[in-house]
Length: 552
Image (cartoon, rainbow, N blue to C red; front, side, top):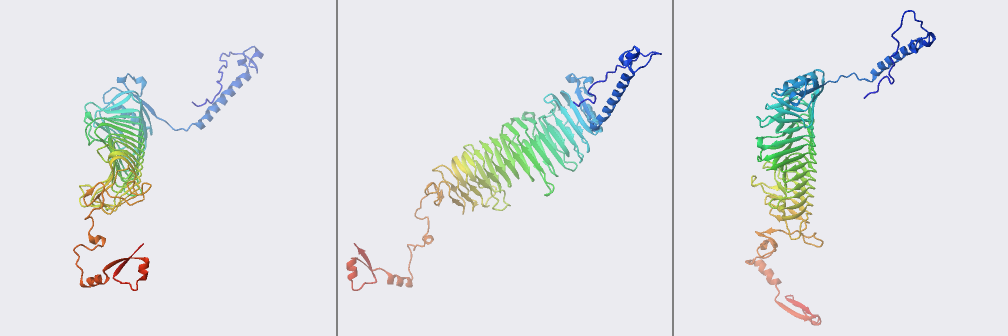
């Protein structure tokens, strides 16, 4: 509260009972009257009033002069009366009073609408579009409920490309019992949802118009009950044209889940050129489903950061961007080319790396019947060296720790230059397996238990300095192989592994030429003579065709 211009109230005690013939003197006592009848006292109070007026006038220098507009909306169904609010709803077509309140605020250039606790029936779409105004609709968190009776409940900035700013706070949005789900569409400008609750509500993008967008979605709770028939995304974000989106500290809950096609979050970022880059930050959210895996898609053609979130029973699709420091329980991460998946904790799940993605520094505990980290080629029409880097992961459990897998959909295609390095792999049946269409890959410095070995069915791969190598200190020797000439397990050399020509030996069926016969005859050894050193020294002549053995 501001300080008062007058620190001491004026007494306001000047006499109002003067009579004809009374004498005025400097002091009222001089003529037998009260102090207030004196001339000096009178002038003192006049001067005090003038000083007060000047103080009030000067205080206006600290007032901005800007006008503010705040209206209140209530509903009689919750016991509010006209004396409590500016606009009173009655539980039927309540969008009429809400739209009137919005129009009144926008007419003043923007302001705040306070919506008192209660349930409001929205039979037609609420429009929040103005190119040059801002409006904040603030409810009582947990008590103010908008029930949509139409397919589209709210349209925000759909048709405009100006600087619309809309903030919705503390409101619960839900469809009426006659609807399975309802929509909130946003367009351009700035839209902020804060501390709201959404029940079977889809928030999606209107593609009309053109212009920058800013979408901020924080501290909200989104609930989907699939038994209601919901069949598409809760939060459907399309980010383009210099858009900036922040989705932070929200909770997404899906119950009674059976539909694998249901997307909990679907985020698309798109940019036409390097000048119109869109940015998305998805941080600190919790996403949980009970039942089959829910889909969470981050389809990015621009910068996107997915950091510090908790996912439970989710299949996460990630294209270009960063997926880091997240916790994934009972789920999968699909990392498309260009994605970086680092420093995540994946419990009872797996990571799939496609193309030239990077998977590093993750803790992965996989179920016993599935691989922990799986690498694939992107598709048949990309370069052979579009392959992943899988480095520095801590893998516990799973059928295979790191699996460079052949994709049956891409027959006769080779993948080269994958890097599998410095991973710690324990509790897996096979630490690393390379299928037969992977070649020229570098697999080195990986640590796994004694007795385990790498299965390398590929060609020309460099598999060196892993913990199954021979040599003192657990490394430094030549890498062994796990399969050769159809044999697996502990492979040792056998007859027939190499032809004579491979090792430069004469085959058993060799027939010498005439010149070769002469050379052999001339250089053949016809006799062997064993002599002592003294006997050898005493020989008068030594035969060139004799082999002399000096015995002790």
